[in-house]
Image (cartoon, rainbow, N blue to C red; front, top):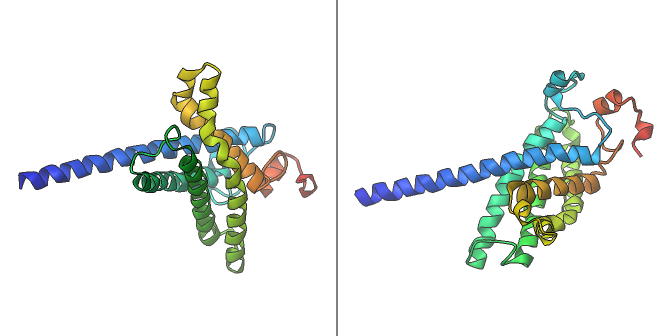
Length: 221
């Protein structure tokens, strides 16, 4: 009985440790998505839904179709697929997945978890968002999946960011949370969204963003 209790406690501690790591990844990805907007849209005002009222902007939709939906939804999906993919690759390799020891598999992991996570998000948005007509939901999902595949192909560089920083003598920065997690994720978000959805400058804006930036649809391209 004592052995079973000890095993149960160890299992619960392991669960808590995994949940903590997933939560940390979730928070990192949310911040990375937010920061990437300043790379993609440096001079444009963004639509953060219900949070617009805190910064003096008009609120159209409180959540769906806003940057806030994207920040929360994509980060949640990526946090899950990132850790799932790491576990699968680690089991297959027989040792913890790392870029230093397994550069090839790690780059593959990077593509698969980003493509998988973003595609799951696209599916959730396509079939749950009240902004899409029922007859358009399959088309929305197919379009999102295609954009996810295109964008995810641009994120191959993500695991190279920290080593690149270290190569110029900034090893401390490269090993920090900023250098090894936040900066690579922010740059990857920018390229995945920018290339996959052509979300740059005055392109990729929703209707409210077009309005608050004083634009018309003619400015999208």
